[in-house]
Image 1: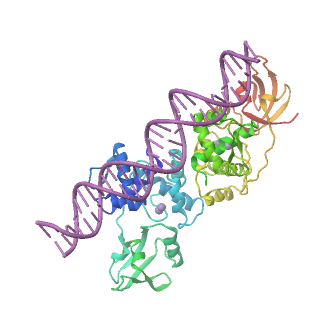
Image 2: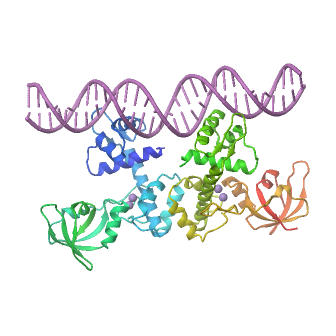
Image 3: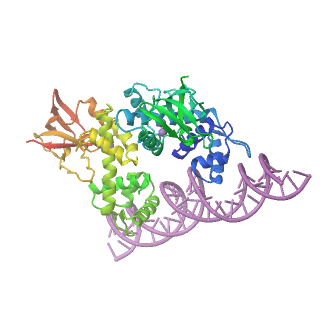
Length: 219
Length: 219
DNA sequence: AAATTTTGTTAGTCTTATCTAACTTTTTAA
DNA sequence: TTAAAAAGTTAGATAAGACTAACAAAATTT
Ligand SMILES: [Mn+2]
Ligand SMILES: [Mn+2]
Ligand SMILES: [Mn+2]
Ligand SMILES: [Mn+2]
């Protein structure tokens, strides 16, 4: 049984693992907001528990077991977000922080009941896939809006970040999942994009914002 | 801010405080299932935080502040139980253990939304009062079934214990909140009671069971 | 190929929450 | 009113999770 802290490290490892194949102590320390010696200590303990592979000076790796544990925490997180938004009526900008706490609840029954009530959803309110009871899920490969060329048409499918601040920004701009956008222009200097969608014409989105939007390309 | 452990001590103090006016280190140790030195240490820390009054060799007391904190944890526990049973469809025998975890979630919004969805309930699934957002609630004074005399008629209003085991026993006997019972006989030897209710005649309930049932006396 | 910078490790400390063993104070019973 | 039992306290230890300071190894630059 991972402790609550262990669970947060596992989740962090999982996310780092998605990007960089090789995870450094420094990376994990930044993600967890702890010092390098703290990470160093922790990975030794987590190796002892079979979740991490650690060799002095070598990059960290999640073991199969560790990946499995991480997947179940992510399931609990995303089911919670979905329940909070669909059943309890919270906005997609409010649910992440609450789910961050709820994901550590131990009761399997609780999450399975949520799953059932929601009709076994496969996506959370931010478009991320929800692993099923066996830990399986499909990871659709959307691309970042920031990587799409001028003139293309895309649909927003998921967010890469679900902080309240980021989503409030999207709410203000009336951007939601499913919104179809056309890229009108890309400013070479700062990589900001001018896009059109629904009733909005020529909205400028910074590179930072475009980097947080996962889209499906239509043309 | 109390830690999760602090919260459990506060709750334990609250329950002991309801019975015995004077709470001993030993009592609290038993309730929390920790050793006396552990309690001794902890009460010093909790005094420093203003929740407990502690003087060497004297009985423990919850301060006004400590009582307030305890009340809010109990609010979260009971709202959770109510939500689990009314919205998520769990049985009254299943909810206590899940609520034991949920009561430590920090998000006020989450519990306030539950409260709203439930229509601001004043009783939990076991008949215990739910403190409102300001910590106020009325504690009706029911009596223990074990203290009622022969021939009297009573209605079950609340449970003094909400373990799955105890409630499964009640479920088997088809005893629920609102059940009206008549006391036919009391065995002097072991204080067991013979009671009649609904379609059941001459059901024998042990003193232990009668001690867990809070009733309103009708005659 | 050095020199420098970045990354990782060790050693030592802290806090919270727990324990056991030993001792002291208070309470209860003879 | 003393002896025994119960309750409470102190001292010392441990484990988890964190820190800083100091040092070592690896990677990058000159
Ligand atoms: Mn989230
Ligand atoms: Mn999400
Ligand atoms: Mn309960
Ligand atoms: Mn209850």
